[in-house]
Length: 343
Ligand SMILES: *Cc1c(COP(=O)(O)O)cnc(C)c1O
Image (cartoon, rainbow, N blue to C red; front, top):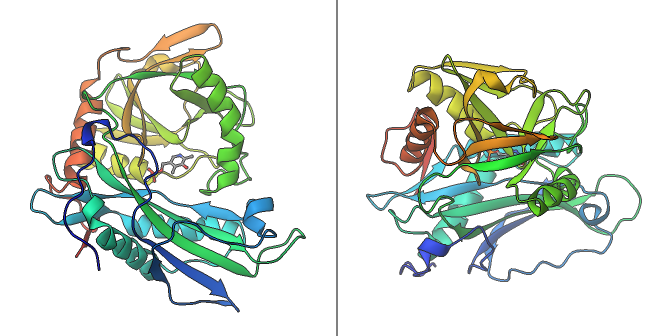
């Protein structure tokens, strides 16, 4: 079905934008069950104006990437973890779970059908995959929908760091994105709606994004915009925050494993107090989109805290970056079960 001939895009200047590719996957849930999904060519969807996803935020999404390897094969990075996370998000918002097998099959179908747009090995670019699950159907009251759409689309995305890794700065926000017993652990649009204003205010002041503190006391570090935080202490411990209101990043769990098993560091999930950042030699943000983004410093009120450097990247951050990308692009052996081939 797919025309496999490689489409040439401006790989060096490909950002993180939407490109309307030939195929996307869609499956509908109706009468209490999922009906067989299929690839479709039209990027537009038509849904009821009463859809719960439009009014009450009954929707969840995922994000992961497909990577072209040196030998021409295609890697998906831990896609079953995305399936499980979307199932948890679905539970939180009373939506039907998308079975793991159906989820991974949809990803593979979309990658294969759009293979011509999968960036070549060596460009540093990859094919971003966006699964989403939304409540649809005629409705107006506040209750879960009876019908749902699960879809996956793809778009080629650029190398975040064209000229190599570069640190950026962040502004500590007075706003919260999520509450402890709210939806912070679910990958749902509502958390993002809440993050638009604080993110905008930070960017307006020249920062990459904002930092969220814990919603109860505003003393502990939680998230770095839409990415998880990690720090490397001066005695070589990889630390990430533990909290009920942060999104469990698959990249973060992967780094916890790699830091320990491959780099031989101590690792810890725990509290990170915003007034105790001097313990850290290096800091970064991690996620599928952010990959590993070194953090130069934080603006905390009138005070600017510099981590490793505002211009240079620390040695451990660099090692973690090389290890993670090496695994994703198939250059370094992956831990058991991390890579799923698309064939
Ligand atoms: C998706 C997401 C992340 C990163 O998760 P990955 O699984 O590593 O891509 C981090 N924070 C938020 C708020 C997110 O939505």
